[in-house]
Image (cartoon, rainbow, N blue to C red; front, side, top):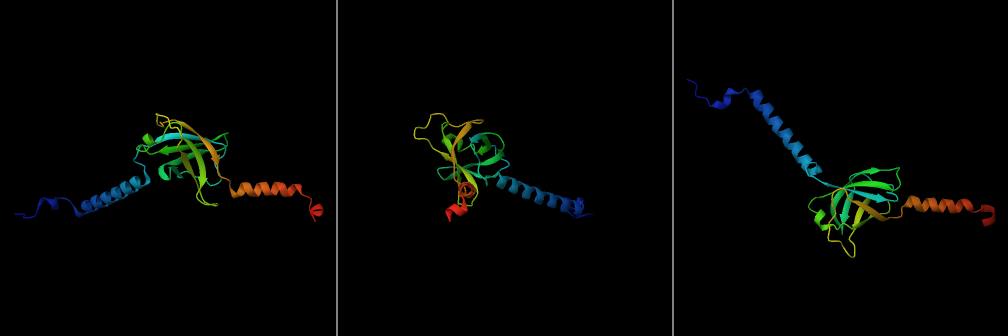
Length: 162
């Protein structure tokens, strides 16, 4: 008579394959949750005169210093530049429909982020999917300063300056 339990009916290779599948699924699930791939985001478009040199997909979107979303992508070459933003669904109720945006930089050479500006007189409606925000300004970049300086220096005649 066989006194072994029912677990030995499966070959040990099947148990190994099942364990590896569970570990791979767990790692995929953890990385997907960390990356935010499993959350439904609210898509919003930001129209700006320019996006800055270091604006990248994945950049933060902040409201009063708190991250409320991320930049999903850019559409350069059009006038104005259009940034696709993804806002967290739980934070959308806190953002009024008449909010504006600024593209700012963490440091002089740092990456850009979108700073939503809370209006003085907020509307009763909150921002919704498909809304288009308008950028108030883009922070000055080192490249812009150098470009302005070079254009001034090109107009100066060195022998006359001497």
